[in-house]
Length: 99
Image 1: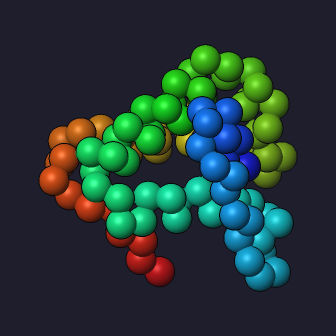
Image 2: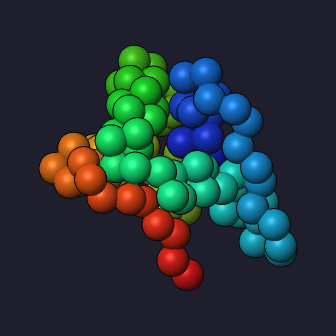
């Protein structure tokens, strides 16, 4: 999602690679790849920085809401908070991508 990639870059993270293939422009940057193989503890720290950006400037991200409503700010905020909570709850876990 473009919002999450933007928040990551604003938080000082490296630029996130665009998803390849015909759906790439619709899907946006592959921000989730950054978590793959990361410990839950490190993932929580990354998600903390992303959430801080989301919360600090909600209007910036609300303005990026897609017209079709998929991946809107409020939904993404909840998902990121759940991911961050899971990372803190299971600090010895490792983030893995599937699919």
